[in-house]
Structures are given as structure tokens and as C-alpha cells.
Amino acid sequence: MGALCGRCWGRLAVTMSLEVVKAKINRLSAEERRQFAERTVELEWDRQIEVDFSPGGRGMPLLAELEQELSEGKTRPIEKVCAERRSRNR
Image 1 (tube, rainbow, N blue to C red):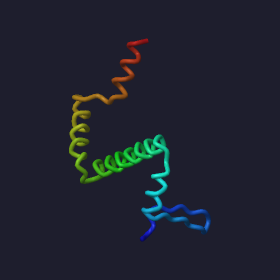
Image 2: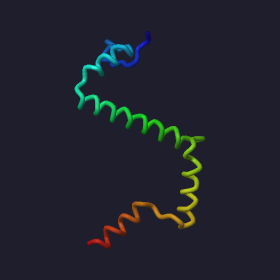
Image 3: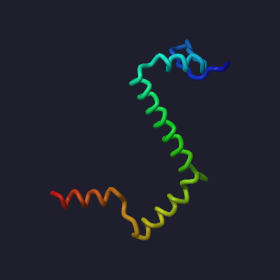
Image 4: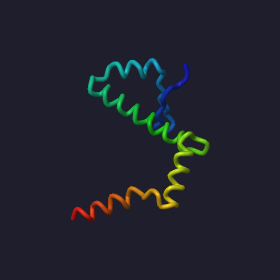
């Protein structure tokens, strides 16, 4: 089986098969597994956002609509809204 993950130190490369990764995950404590699962979900979320908002991605029409609304003054950037609220609350 090919390498699933690898890490290089100088010329030494260490690789792990899927079976080794699964075994290492099974040895994690419940808290470590929870943290690992949380991080895995974060990575997938980040990857999906990149795909959706790349040229041709399914989020591009939404982005185009937002840019149009911003240019027409129908929507304001969140930074401006937050700054206005902060200045009112002082």
C-alpha cells in the first residue's frame, strides 16, 4: 500500500499506511480522539470553502450577488456595521 502521510527530516522520509494511522488513532484517549475529530472536520470545512469559492465553484454566484449588493449600497461590509455599533456603545 502507498504512503498515506509522510514527514521528512533531511533525507529521511517516514511514511505511514492507512492501517498504521488507524492503529495510532485507536490508541488515542477519548479527549485526544475528540480533538482529532474536531480538527478533521475543520480541515474538511476549509477544503470545502476553497472549492466552493474557487472559479466555477458553487459559491461564486453568491459572492457575485454580494459584490453587486455592495456596489449598489444595498449591503454594507460587516466591518463598518461593527465599527458603528462599537462607537455607539462608547
